[in-house]
Amino acid sequence: MLVQTKGLTKSFGGLTAVNQVDAEIETNKITAIIGPNGAGKSTFFNLISGLHPPTEGTIHFKGTDITKLRTYEIARLGVGRTFQTTHLFEQSTVLDNVIIGHRLRTKSGLFDSIFKTGRLEREEAACREKAHEVLEFVGLSEMSHRLVSDISQEAKKRTAFALALATDPEIVFLDEPAAGINPEETDGLAELMKKMVDKGITVCLIEHKMKMVMSIADKIIVLNHGKKIAEGTPDDIKNNELVIQAYLGGGDHAQAN
Ligand SMILES: Nc1ncnc2c1ncn2[C@@H]1O[C@H](COP(=O)(O)OP(=O)(O)OP(=O)(O)O)[C@@H](O)[C@H]1O
Image (cartoon, rainbow, N blue to C red; front, side, top):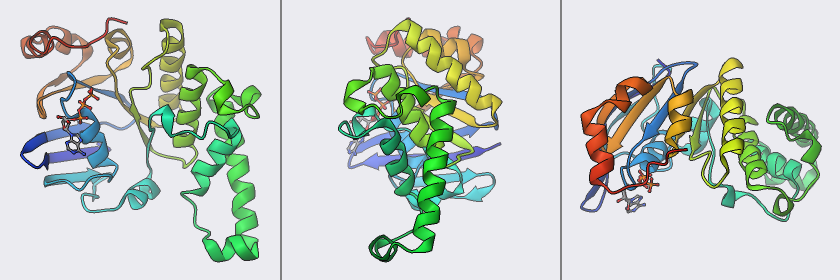
């Protein structure tokens, strides 16, 4: 077990966005979190990556209690995540975006930057090397010197993956990786997720595109109104009455492809 939550709960004022969720994410598998709009999926991610403190419950990563740790401490332990592509710097190159993202998580402070210490130079070189390595992995080597504003939405998604991979995570949380791209590009990103697993990285994603989820997930966890209503293999979930009701009842938004 890589990540385990117990009784995980987050309330915003009177609204309980995540409600007593017990979940387990297995090592070296693909776990998908699905559910209608407002089900609590993003909040669940934000709790695990330390963006929000939980109201109740615990989160363990590799057996260590990370419930009260800060975002950077959780990242340093090996938990990576992507943000929406709107977090990229549009007027910088793909390579610089990955380097900046990596630098934000490495150690040199203002002193090093002003006096250009040996440590800073070593870190810069390591960052650049790592950035090239992850860009090659996600298939963007050829585009590394293009401005983010000039590349396709799919390439932006790959850049966001590269940013998450640059810190050498053991698990990556991908927030709607296939939103806003066409079916062919979606297949390409699904392949990339499988390649991550082959490299030993555990993948957990939020996704509305059901065809993709059903084809790549080893396990699916379904949230509705903050509660876990089902979990299991894609086949279990497809035939689960509560899940069918949740989607039909919400008039929602599960996408066929
Ligand atoms: N920072 C916040 N402050 C107040 N309410 C919030 C906050 N973040 C989320 N919520 C509320 O919590 C609920 C769950 O939201 P969340 O974004 O986690 O759902 P989601 O399943 O990711 O939805 P979607 O599929 O639409 O992205 C929603 O009602 C949302 O309005």
